[in-house]
Length: 224
Image 1 (cartoon, rainbow, N blue to C red):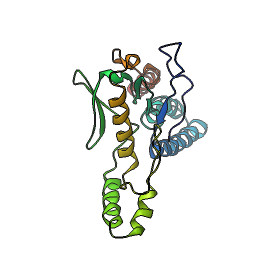
Image 2: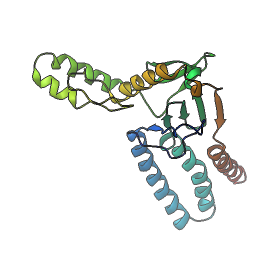
Image 3: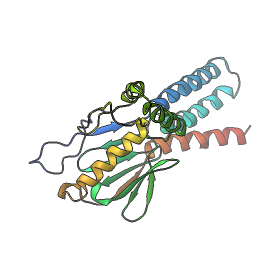
Image 4: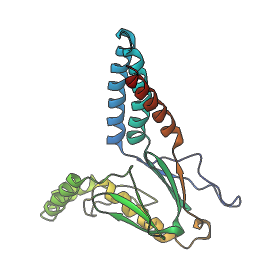
């Protein structure tokens, strides 16, 4: 679930380039691809076989819907390296140096909280209550015999040099990811290269096309 990012920042030319670990939601990506295929098929059919204003309405709808669907399914990602955590959410990109992170919290959603108390949700690392319940059942069953150890090993993850362990308790993947991020935040909180200010950038590349499609759609409906 993690891959190197060739565009990682390089705060100090004397140090090796920090390599990002990238966390994304496979279920979100799969759902987004299916939705885009469905929307594309319906929109293309309306463009080709529609009459009157239908093709224009379909075109405006595609300009509005496609960026929104992509933003909430394909776009979310979390990038982590030794210097900072970069959170790419549907409409914003938040860069938090480790020194500015107060905590990483998991409840009904996974969140990062900076030292000012501002919370940012990690869209790419969604909480699965079903997976937590399943892991809890497997952990209880694992204590009854060696068969449980085999099941627990299926959930072992590697991250930041930590490999899978067959004797570790079974945990959902997203909870394990949050554990890895907490360990990295604790280890790098005082590092000189992990200091700086939190930056937030709006995703105008998503908002612009969606807003344009919405405006065209409203004009077409209002003049119809």
